Amino acid sequence: MSSFIVLGRFQPFHKGHEYLVNCAFALAGDAEVIIAIGSAAKGWESDNPWTLEERTEMINSWLAEHNKTARIVGVKDINDPPNWVTHAREFHGEGILVTSDKVTKELYEESDFKVNLVDLSNRENYEGWRVRQTLLMLSTVYDDDAVKAVLSSTIPQPVIDWLVDNDAIFRLSTMVSGVNVG
Image (cartoon, rainbow, N blue to C red; front, top):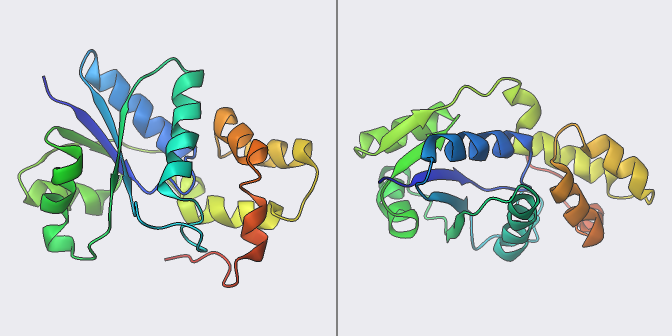
């Protein structure tokens, strides 16, 4: 029985990720779902504001809310696309990648990895940099209810609660370069 793998940086875990993970669970049936967190050594910088541990906590808060279980693994960057899949495979193992990203699909298929491409409608609103830009704008707003209301369109409620309860939004206001679109 193959595992179903969702790969992302999850900076933060947003509704696009939620959709992919739900698709992986639907495809998996009784098989294992693996959530592979990329850029595992990154954190506390403008385009990677949260550490691997924090992103794991965000995802676990979502999983717990939905009574789901997944194995979460970190994958460090190597900045070498031709060798990425071989490298990532050491962390997430074999299985079927569930992705909405065509470049990632092609990269994995070139390495003879099975891929299930998911059509993510409204993808432009669920791009990580857009979500981080919204969080940056909210990082100096000290009205938790207002922050939660704005974030509810792009981030699942358990993750919003985690971000607010752990003061994980406000650090963005101190990051010098803003949010990188790259």
